[in-house]
Length: 455
Ligand SMILES: *Cc1c(COP(=O)(O)O)cnc(C)c1O
Image (cartoon, rainbow, N blue to C red; front, side, top):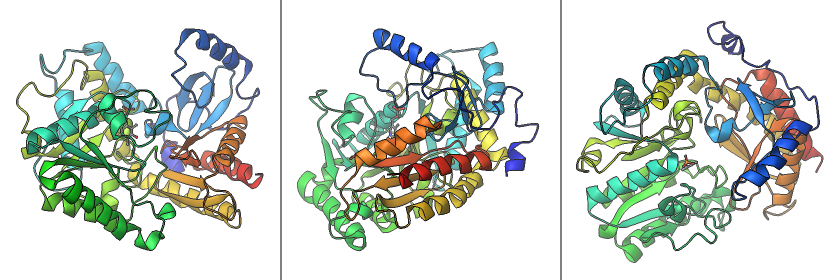
């Protein structure tokens, strides 16, 4: 695969050299000066994981303004799955941006929008007739999925889960579980949002073996006894939770959620904003557990870094909305659609679904070996190129966010960009671009594992 990633067709001349290079401390002096300037310009509400200014990126490398080559274990939060500035994306975006930048699809049509819709209809799980609508952000698409489900069912209530993350708009922050930083002070929240406990095997009070059944019972109680199934429009679930801590619910649980939805005519919405588009070693994470959602929401990895999102699902549900009920000025922008077509081309050409599995095959043994006998690591989990390490106080399951922060800081100092996540902030997650060469992946993993051995 590394050989394939190096083929002339793929490598652009301006792709940065695929090696970690530290020329200064991280952040370097140029980044520090710019960061200080930014603080006088931009709202403090905008957090930053690593205050480093990037001027070039590609493959598995981010090049900062001090000339450091950083290993990218973030992909801009699971966005540049095909790598930043992937050649097919650059080529199609260049062609498109020179021809037309915008018409608004609600005013006049263009091919790219329809082609992206067709790809989504074909490649999302389930053989039923499907239709799509495009938007610009994940939160916007989640909101629209809820709107569609409400219109289709004539019901108000929406069920979400513990540890869920669905976005930062009023509706989606209400659907999100974690208070700080997403909700605190931003209320009042949207009505008719209910929360069931998520089947979180590592933290289920009575142990992982009871997790699926007990969590299903709690969900059924919520839907049937507390809300009333006939009032419930949708159940919205991430097949693998992202911000909540890369939590993988048991397959039996996801299937149970699906059958509860089916039994009561509730629309099952899979939020695959983070997991979708080749990230987990399947095109969609729902496939791992045989989940066939009624609606599936995509965004992050869909367009290689340009803002594009989609809702795809059962034709009769998607068509319940009268003309004019969906859309947006920028929704399905032609340049973003061109980028998405470049993403699909790249995934197919480089077989990146298989590459995500290969990344897991390389990374998981390294992580597990380094975790073995180390009390700080509670669990190594994930699928494909969506992997995480949960840190705990040794000898307990008590979350250890300070340990995760220390590991992350050590990685950052050594030029490896990692992200924290989890309701308790004690999970480090890996989301490398799928085009990261093996050597770079191994180098980054070595830095990561060495830094927790030093705890
Ligand atoms: C990031 C994310 C969203 C929100 O997407 P935005 O583009 O940031 O609005 C929604 N759901 C999940 C699962 C996400 O990871």
